[in-house]
Length: 225
Image (cartoon, rainbow, N blue to C red; front, side):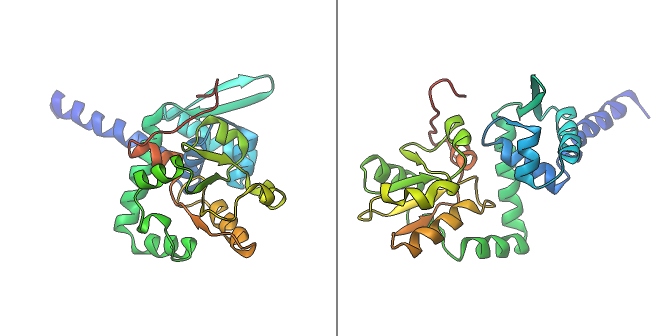
């Protein structure tokens, strides 16, 4: 085998390192969670519903492929995406899978209850209506994720607080709820609750990663990245 062939094989092997690192459903879920904000291993394990030991093992694989970075703060290890390109990679991979796999399309349709708020309203029109105060955009993720990044003009109202804060919402305007993206259940649960209480509520399947991937603006609390 000549030298150039060996180099070419090595190049493919290096690319395969990344593909192997993400060849796990739970590692993909951890990437999606880290698209929202930096998190401790304990938080990631709880949100992905796996053990801390297993979460740590998955994160080591992702770190070895240089997809995530870590820092220690006392006894806690915090993880974050190495940069925005990893979030863009997750969105593009998910959308490719959705385009190619019928089972995924069917699953997403069931998750959305057949409704996608953007079917009749593009993202920039939604942004314009939110800017004019014609609709209320609710971010129902945990507050720490909202502080890290959120859609413009969105209000933070975590799902666990929604029921007791209903009196803060106007009944005269449509409400659009979003969470972590198409696979996330929180926005759907929020919409179900709001509709039961008489609100005109709709689910936005985009999360911050999808919004940013399309070149649309996101915001963060002062001091957050």
